[in-house]
Amino acid sequence: MKDNFCLKSDTLTITPTDTEKLWESEWKIAFRKDGKEQIGTATFAGEKILGTVPLNVELMPEYRNRGFGTEIIRMMVNWAFLHKNIFEVISKVEHENDKGINALQKAGFVYRSIEGNVETYSIVKEKTSWTGLYLFIGICTGLLLGIVINSVWLGFILGIAAGLCIGGIMDNRATKYRESVTGKSAQTVRRTKK
Image 1 (spheres, rainbow, N blue to C red):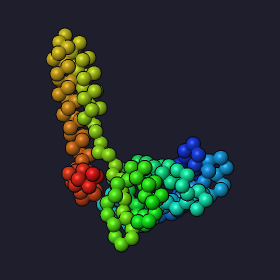
Image 2 (cartoon, rainbow, N blue to C red):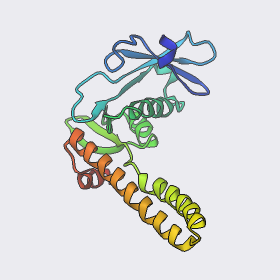
Image 3 (cartoon, helix red, strand yellow):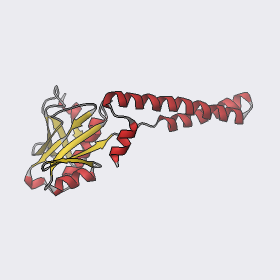
Image 4 (spheres, rainbow, N blue to C red):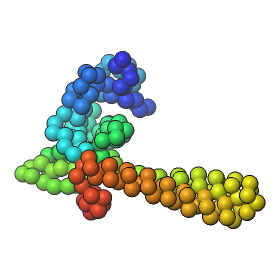
């Protein structure tokens, strides 16, 4: 059962210590070769609000400054973003921790704020884009329809129109769902991302 939640890269494995509490328990970080030597931990434990989860990664001192931090952060963020209700991952780091800040920035995190000696960084899940997919499907379907009705141009135009409509509706639904979970409009997310 534990292997179902094991995250793997070429060099590392990240495994939760409690599969019943994935969002609260520590995840053990080890080298993939043996999987026994723990080099650090990661956790999503902390306050989770409006589609946002915290991420904390701690590596043992001898494994810092080797690029593992960025790899671990990316793996954990990718896993979190697989969940429908998660749209942002935040991480806090001490202002003097240049290596930690660098790892977050390399993983795509953006500076958000500072409170005392602690800086907050976050990464936002990209907005869905169904329009392109449905436009492609519409064009293919439209061309087939055009061949059947003996008017390729009419079928092509109908396919494009149908693809744009369906894709637009799907994108709109995804945006509204995201806003209902996070309480943030799409414009707010775009402004804070810069």
